[in-house]
Image 1: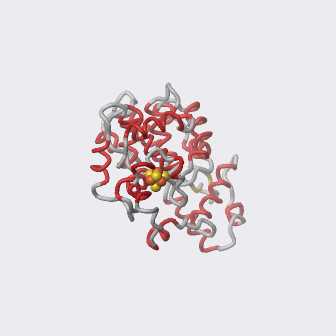
Image 2 (image 1 turned 30 degrees about the vertical axis):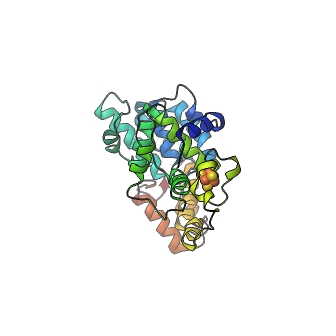
Image 3 (image 1 turned 120 degrees about the vertical axis):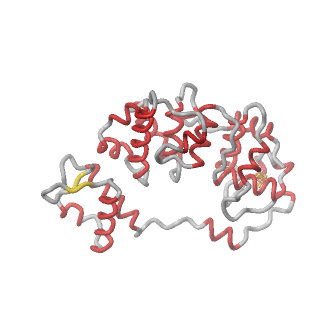
Length: 286
Ligand code: SF4
């Protein structure tokens, strides 16, 4: 079982000092942090988030920014389509309203690039609403502490499970606490149960900390990055980000030896609107 008061107390004493958690962060700042942190470690996100919020403190500022500036500022966060989607999201906010970030999950879900997790996270962390927020960390803590076993993948009922736990007061703090507990203590490969606030009531610990199943071990395997099209795309994007003017094909050709893979990566960047080709055949950020 999960004692909400223990999670909240632990979070208040142990939460990392992430810049978007500081007082005064706007809903727009929270939205940026959630999109940036998706699939990227927070340590890499923090400096980029600070730069973005200083340059584009409102959706209107980002909507008005040149796309190449936005992609350069995204830097090496990875999955740069997220930067384009954030700019589209900002434009939608400006077009649809006064540029403010909506409060309700359905209204947030209607924005470009905002999925179910992000909509819930913004509703909870920007507006303090009592909506369940479930990411891989929350899922893992719940699975171990309550079910006593890992769960293979997102579960149909998981939002209901977590909704039932939400306290009347401080629901968003509890949600952030559960997430932080999964990130810092109840980690996938080496949970430090001795310092966990849930250790007295944890079903997995009570069952003798059963070893992970083969299925769970397989899921923990970190996807390899080296040699993937994603790596090649990243190398081409680096050339385009660092160039002060359009570059010839030869500048792209030197980043990767495999012609077919390099062409595929370049074509996909053009398709995704992350790169553009001029009439003279040279390449640049859009
Ligand atoms: S006691 Fe261990 S397994 Fe249980 S929730 Fe805490 S860290 Fe996770």
